[in-house]
Length: 363
View 1 (spheres, rainbow, N blue to C red):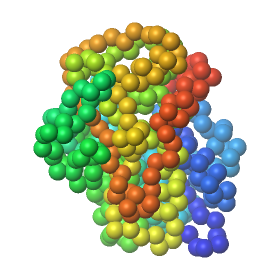
View 2: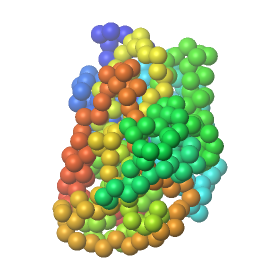
View 3: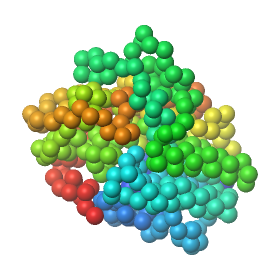
């Protein structure tokens, strides 16, 4: 652990991805004395775009793969590891383009390699997990109703345990099915907590909802806010998928820089809280349906038609909003960036980078 008066050393895995690079920049801004190391294998399309900027900020980059235990052997000891490396798509392993074995190797075995590194150098560990650890069937069966152009929870129906109109809490079911992706993250959570208890180093699990902001590599299966805005601006084909094909499905949105205030508290020496696992999301006030996002894009960029496909896809869910009240209670944390600011930031970046979708899609 870091000693008072000595610069803290942080390792961020997946540092050249959108979340990892945003955390590195924001951390340096909040604490210029921090020493940041970064590991990335650059397999994510667009990730090399962040390399030069991070190096100019003084980040010490290592081209490595968390799936390879030997890639950790030459890393210096650090005080904390922030794990933001993952295959983040709920369709991973079933989309015909990605390997189920590689998904497990990356999201689960990679976590084991990081935990072994933490054990050996005495570092604390923070896992950026996901809302997708929650039970798909329970969420898919939620009683929702369209109000204006978005789904809302039917207040007259009994809600499952762990769900309120404020969103999904940490007590919501994590029973299968949760997708291959969700299961690798849930398994990583469990094994991380066991490593921390067994080998006596601090572990925090931060379950994040949809993360979005400028510079995110927009794709239909991940980074949906960035993808939709970029695609609308470029007049790319867009489709409302499932739930009647109206675009009423709702997600909340969080900017990853809003995580920094929490991470700074979690990495304080001897930091303590009863809650080891917490939800982090934009909440109801930062939520939006695809139809509402389209209306916003229409106002910003002008008209563009959206096709409709009413059949539900596997793993599609009508309404996911993260209830972060436990994070506020345990850590005094709340999201700081309003949804409209996130959308404007993405739009400005899209206008300044006309080839961003091609960069995001490049092999």
